[in-house]
Amino acid sequence: MRKFFEFDNLGTNYRTETVAGITTFLAMAYILFVNPSMLAADGATGMDENAVFVATALAAAIGTLIMGVFAKYPIALAPGMGLNAFFTYTVVLGYGIPWETALAGVLVSGIIFIILTLTGVREKVINAIPAVLKMAVGAGIGLFIAFIGFQNSGIIVADDSTMVALGDLTNGPTLLAVFGIVITVILIAIGLKGGVFYGMVITAIVGMIFSQVPTPEAILAPIPDVSPTFGAAFSHLGEVFTLQMLVVILTFLFVDFFDTAGTLVAVASKAGLMKDNKLPRAGKALFSDSAATVVGATLGTSTTTSYVESATGVGAGGRSGFTSVVTALLFILALFFSPLLGVVTSSVTAPALIIVGVLMASSLKDIPWDKFEVAVPAFLTVVTMPLAYSIATGIAVGFIFYPITMVAKGKVKEINPIMWVLFIIFILYLTFLH
Image 1 (spheres, rainbow, N blue to C red):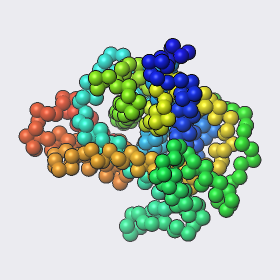
Image 2: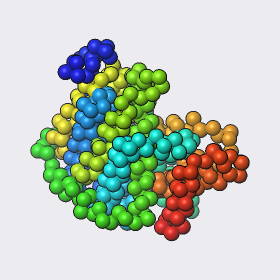
Image 3: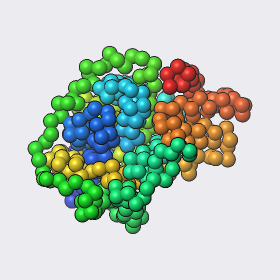
Image 4: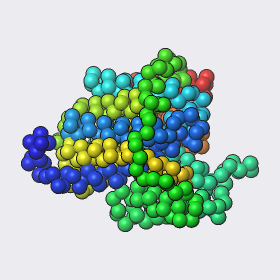
């Protein structure tokens, strides 16, 4: 085992790797409860919350195990924040697409990702999209997720005069969410690893004390039935061959593609695993991620992707794939804690959504706002996502305006041909479908 994971070359050991794996799990364990809550949306989507819980844990466990054993990186995977919001609020509730068809779209995006990885086309696609748009998409998704958190908690409510307004902060569930935000901010500010997860735990406990959150009848229980969502994607594959679903698949693919690439580079750099500014075994890492998406869609969850929270495990000393193996085992153990799903109300998940939104918005700092030709598409991408309540629409607007501003600036030669193809696709999307 030591030889397989190259402990000696990486200067690590079992104890360090185990602690790192536990640290990574605690930093991202919130997704076990946030993802089922997000995809089920209080029954609005029709998805079975318990089945999604199992799909989430298994997709995370299998994806992380593949990353650890095949790519040998200390990087964990789970259904991605942002993509689950897009799945629920844009595709299913916004477009009225059945959740089974949406899962089929996730499955197809994962298969395409595998093909792009195996053929080496991924580098061309990555290079085709301007860095400013990649950063804008990440920040925009952060604002969108945060807005959902504010809305679900009642902190922000609908208003006939101003469209949105501040909610009643004296309302019990809303006040609990505000408390959750404050305590989570404090935990992260003092540098506590897993601050988002611990913030949810403390918020849930306080909610139970003040009767704002139901007290669970048990903590452990048999693993719930995953059959309500398992394999549903395959029976609806014939429904993905429409222009609307093409845009949906492209969005799933695009966000996963660049979120994964960014996470891999960031975590590998922190671990000192980069060589000559290149990522060793990049193909294996990307394949692991794309395979996890296919597994997740088969089980019944939105896109599974690499988690930047893996950096907490690296910070604890994780350097090899054994870190990921430990994290994967903990996700399997988590399958027995399904009774806690009832404790995770909107008031408990809202702080996690808002804080994750804050962390994702950090990419705004890298956008060159003094260059008007790129500032415009970046700004429109970021601001349109929450205002239009759609990640796909934000991407579409940004990708349409980028060629326009670049041509106006006389920089037509800097526009990759692939961007023109996307320009046409998104114009058709906004004209005929949205």
